[in-house]
Length: 79
Image (tube, rainbow, N blue to C red; front, top):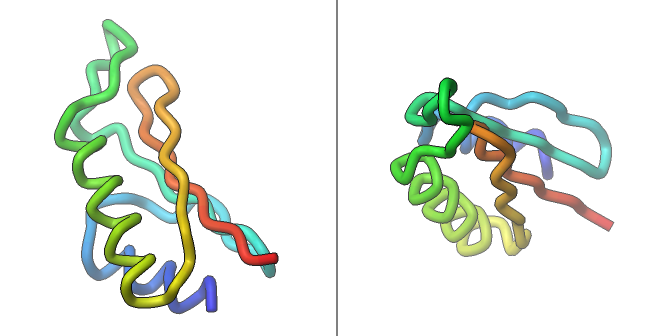
């Protein structure tokens, strides 16, 4: 199922798939972050929450958003 979620994210967002294995998917972006100030962009954060909500609705999988410097990471796990 994570492969389908990765394809969904790829088609519906500017987040890049960083890691995909059997039980974990990581997507990230810094497209709208400020590299010099090491701050996330509000557009990236909003987009991350939008994708998390869409994935939950479509696939029933809960995601987490993490802000690291200018990066926004989305993590999805299947037990």
